[in-house]
Amino acid sequence: MILILARRFDDPSANRMVETIQAAGGEVLFVTLTSMEQLSSLAIANRPGGGYDCVLRIDGNVINLNQISAAWIWRNWHPLGVDDAYQHIYGRRDQWAFVDQEWRAFYRGFIMTLGYHGIFCVNPPPFNSAFEEKCCQLMLAAEVGLQIPSTLYTARLPLAQEFYQEHDGKIIYKPFKGFTRISQPESDGSVRVARLLTNRVAEEHLVERPNFMPTPGIFQPYIEKQLELRIVVVGKRIFSCAIHSQSSERSREDWRRYDFENTPYALYDLPEEISAKLLLLMERMNLVFGSIDMIVTPEGEHVFLEVNPNGQFDWLTHMLGLPIYQYLAQMLMQGTTDYQIDALDEVRHAV
Image (cartoon, rainbow, N blue to C red; front, top):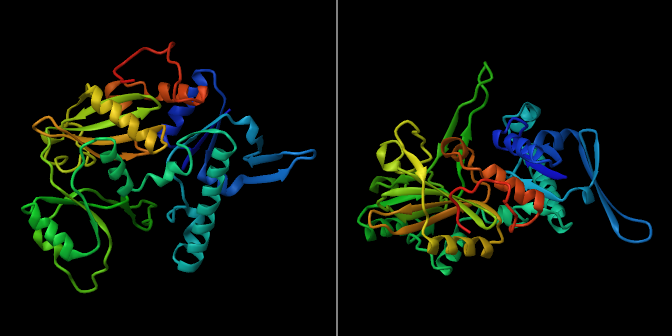
């Protein structure tokens, strides 16, 4: 049985993964945050005569973890304050903090239990969440021989100002985490969502203001782009997409400001040397799946930016027809990064 963990039942990637595994003859247990909160328990006890049992009860099912061969941990998951179940305490800071910390602790413990029970996890805990952090990623990328941007992590504006001057005023800022602000629901139930992405830095941005709250950020030189790459690693195989982000004013600084109509996407033939270094990086990070962002400069240099252990890839399967779901399903069903793909059509990938 394959366990799929997602935030919601309407998650499109999770649902396509369920369909793909079932179409290949696999059995799936699909678990969401809501079902865990309302309908679950995990019991761990000694077994008479030796050993132990871990039993998950969820949504009317009683599952011994021995029945689960692999787990897809799709997106780290935590209570969301906009959910109806939390509206009565979301504004009460102490109560919300307790509810939030308890669910996060249970989730982390449950995921660790899966990994140390011998279940093949995509990605293995604790690395599934540990390598959402950026600092160590760049260090390891440089260690395996990838080109990285000079990077300053700081909350001190004077140091950011120095960095700005060193790079002739051509730098960018990005947050450590993809920050999203969700408004309280309107009368019609709608909410407004604002995202903080990569931005060019102007000198006035580095001026200290009243009530300034020092918060660490990531500062890097602005790198001229020929292309941006979204690279998806599935075990030992790599799918590469070229994003012509410079074709659109909207996506020039960060292709995640999507402008699909004006931004061409195409398959990309990643150099073997870069592919080998990326696979080595994934091995160093103990990750078996990830979405990697790189820049190709006008001079043809490949610059590593980051890897997201839970990075989105669904749009690549729609736009370019890449069989990422099928490959991921085979890796889960076979429980190894060296999965066989004899029954699948070969497309652009590197081994």
